[in-house]
Image (cartoon, rainbow over all chains, first blue to last red; front, side, top):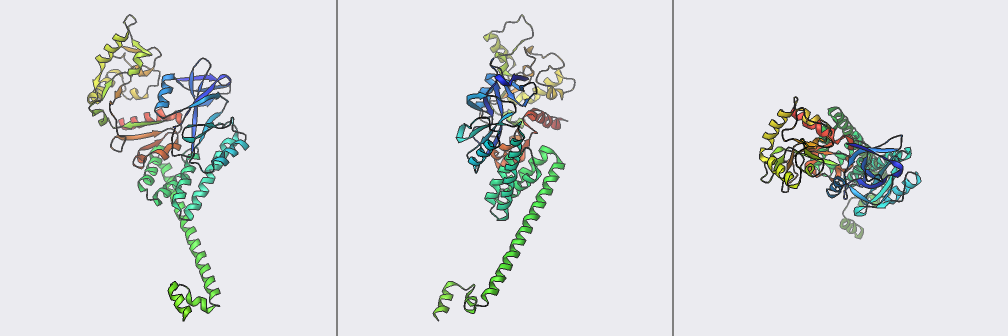
Length: 268
Length: 164
């Protein structure tokens, strides 16, 4: 059953996010309370200054917290229209910089509140365009870093960045899922890589799954091409070095020989 | 928010039980249809004991129960939070707020249930950002809802796809 509370008198008392997560970033809807004690999980904000969403009883909220679906916000803070909690967890790289960017963008309503497991609970005003633009940029940056590390064949880092991109994304996105699936595959987590593609199909249908497959093919081609370019560049560099050293016969002669052989040759 | 949809063989666990209503509602918003009925602690305990069944019988019971109360059996799944069946519920319990939990079947498993590939049919996630916390073995079981608000409709869709 849906309920509504007046924003200007409501307090934020809980956030719908697990207390512990491997994620670096989580988005949490708010559980808000009106002065008469009514509890609502705020899913939307109306133009007549109300937060609306499913009504909860105190028992239900306690159950959600005990089951790890929600965390308490203590002390409670005043609600503002458009607010959600962005959870910056300790696994998020450059967490200080992210917080600073929230401040600079003018979307951080209060200083971050301490959460479980060293999480920072940031009440963010998502009605300000800058908030969602910032989140999109974080996703784009994480994707760029994932591709960079993939290009370097550092799949562990690529996987971590692709995970972050997936967490920042505001929905399932074919490019992000493709990057994440490829990274899992390269990290020998084939079951997870395939499970992710199945999840995409089951969640959004066969057309969306085709989009993810196409993105995966593009990504493989892109990385292969990049690898070929790097190999070509390396070959060119090797030829350049060889040409340069060919002008110094004593050095060229020893290239590629074991160190002991070179020492023997030098001694001779 | 997450929801696990498990295969019904889990109900065959030795300690499982079922009731044709939410047991938590007995103390709160549900009471007998007949306003003259007494509804003290002892009455509630007796009511619970009368309608409590073994988990292994839950599937067979559910088929008859749904057929007896709905013209279209899929309506059992489709009806919103505040709603009634097509015919008054045989046990006579009603919610003071019209909540469907007064007639929705509850199954309790009174022991730990391993949430693994053999038992979990679907794992429905509200937000996608907790996908990272799903064990590798269960990733293929995950369905990400469009948003937190569509968790219930996603579950409804999954059940109806299987039923139809």
